[in-house]
Length: 495
Ligand code: ZN
Ligand code: MN
Image (cartoon, rainbow, N blue to C red; front, side):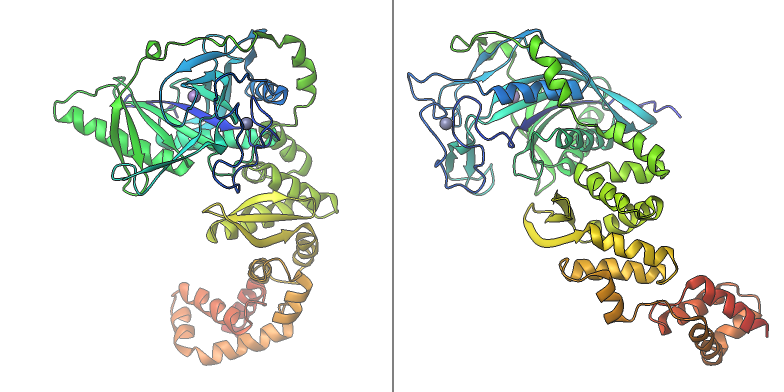
């Protein structure tokens, strides 16, 4: 199957990744851990841009940029340097942003995603280092706001801006690309994707190979997908009515699900880029080997190894490696001698499905348990232990509990906020598998009590058997093995 892209949609993304795991900012000693700090508390003359101050580059930020470049299979520049991007805006007290222009540290990388027609390569044009501006806080919505507050805690944080080629063909591919990129960056241990503002996306999109429009500063991957869906529809409508798409910058209003024109696009020359005279050009070529040594096993390699080593399906391996914490959690379970295939099913299908249903995301793993965040990014008091799976999987594998009961155990662990163990839940709820004589007793009762369904079945309505199995499961509170119940019912109905 080849995806033809009939509407000529081209999407390119620019992603600002904040290196929020580095201890200090890019050019000063202020702490990077500002998310819970009082407004403007974590600032100094350098990140406030006061006259006469000089930047001192954080070596760790450069190493992180090289790490990103290697992980994205890009070329690392032998020599790189900083430029000033001049513009006036209140979040930028210096009047310019220190960034990189024609000598970015990384160029020509790639990320492989699951595209519309199988594996699809998204080219990475470049990745460069720059400093984060402060943050404007609008009172109310951006359009109607009567005032704006400024918080400079974010000013001077290290960013890596990653720019893709316009290789993305659908909003869904854009979302998959972002999920994959976030996953890779989390493997590199350079940022915490759960923190507010960790990844900010600008999306460029055009239809029928026409003029592109930029949508600025979208905060979630779902938001990017929705903004693109809306913007593609809007552009197609304009063209259908004989209009022309103009090159402009638009804002995505998450609440209303629409994009709004902000300004016509500025050109690069408007920024009057020039070399940053306070920072010397750097030769980083000598650093590459030692940074390469620190590279962890990346998602694609881990995915292949999981299939090979644990004999699990491609789908399970993909789900389990989609987050480094989950992959580590799974491997700890396997290391305890648990059957890896069954552990994969109960982790990737049941546990992940249950987390999804509860709108919980995995936020961290401490070697013993995984912890969760809700979708609003708030840490909640809930966890799931490696030992929970280590207890549960063998009970199921040895036929001591039914699969419905095993699901129930997982739900109950989450309901108890990780407090109760599988053994305790099985005892409290009486979930040990019903013995065969109990099942056969309940089957006899069920046949006697449901004469209508029995008649229907004997009259040829095969579906009535499912109903009767359901009744047996209900009476045994799910502790019967559904297969056994079905067999016993068939025997009873014949007799
Ligand atoms: Zn500072
Ligand atoms: Mn930028």
